[in-house]
Length: 217
Ligand code: DX5
Ligand code: ZN
Image 1 (cartoon, rainbow, N blue to C red):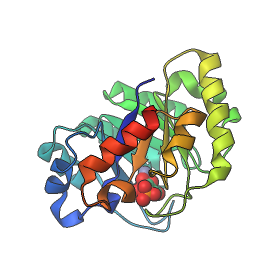
Image 2 (image 1 turned 90 degrees about the vertical axis):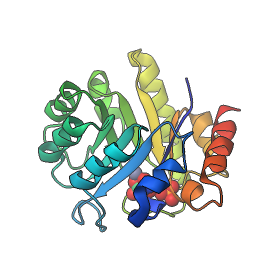
Image 3 (image 1 turned 45 degrees about the horizontal axis):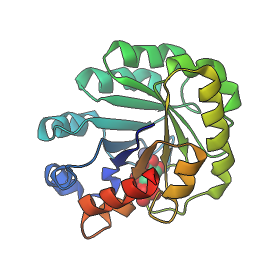
Image 4 (image 1 turned 90 degrees about the horizontal axis):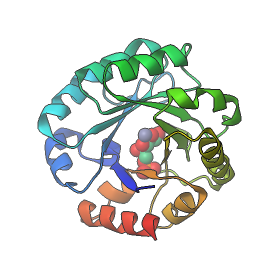
């Protein structure tokens, strides 16, 4: 299981996104939080900004759609060139179709669960999913406190994936920092989103190296 770090640009300077992307050359992905002020109480950026960012960086884009109608919008993010597109279980009305459309458009399919959403009910969907995202805060804002209550679910999700036997990455997002990443890795996560822990650091690239080291140990 290779550790991957996906810094969230939610904590970067939105007026200088190309520069902010260039500050993290050692990132495996750039995590882009798309919020619509309906699924979550915050409004961020959408498809035009993702398209612009794709032209400005060679780091693959990891789109996390926190929007009410992902079935309608997710395929477009894959079509413009996002490397990974994640939809929320709580919002998708036809997740199997949408996950397949994401893959058909050439991206990795991601499926996200809020802290209180059980993972067991989605066991049969694992063959449709390239990356399972377990939120470790309530989605909507950066800089929130990590929710330890999700740790047992990370463990159970890793067990479900092992039982399924296919390759499904297990991503955590929210409050992931130097003081919490080891717990997540130990529980079975292998892709780590970090916003404030990377872009709030004086040297974002060094912060990524440090997080990677802690998660690998
Ligand atoms: C929150 C977003 C996260 C956010 C994480 O809803 O999905 O990606 O940027 O920020 P930190 O790492 O600061 O908790
Ligand atoms: Zn996110």
